[in-house]
Image 1 (tube, rainbow, N blue to C red):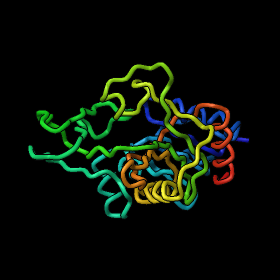
Image 2 (cartoon, rainbow, N blue to C red):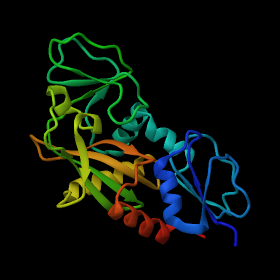
Image 3 (cartoon, rainbow, N blue to C red):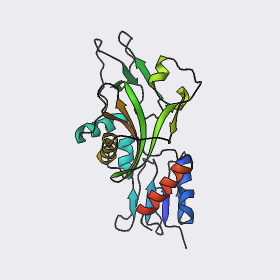
Image 4 (cartoon, helix red, strand yellow):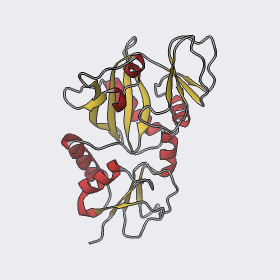
Length: 251
């Protein structure tokens, strides 16, 4: 019997997409093409922004390319969040000299993992960038994996022991700066879950991994971004993805 599920990744490939195809078994194939062959009934578009040609009456596409394009562009994503009432850090395309607090200059709007971010404190010279976001002091940071209207898996960013960090590394919590995702004793608030689901919905996505923080001063959840091609690492993460996608895809 031919495979019925097409896991579509970008041309450069995707480790997470390849892992999902493996988890879905023999009924799935990893494909990078733009046209959907007749045998496929479901396309899982894993982070691919290029056009996709298919018959909408015959094929179900999860995460259409136009929604992925919206998600990967930070400026466009924040505009969508704002229009839908999703809570997110303040942002602007022009940073005044008399700014207060810490701002993050995003020298590119399509990077991931903290790449292209320059920390600007009061008095620092302004770095030219297409997007600036206000830094929100945080007590917790999560990655919440969303499918449809629910969070099906949660991770929390925690600092690795014995990793030295300068003051900028404490602000930008990525792998390079000594922060990793943990799954034990992770309890995101209802506000975090609601904002995560709303963020995915606002972008027109069917699923996504939402990076979200809890503000230190107000205890509110703020969405940072939605990842459309997240890593799938660890037995618990793999099982959550297998169960969720198998329960929600058409074959």
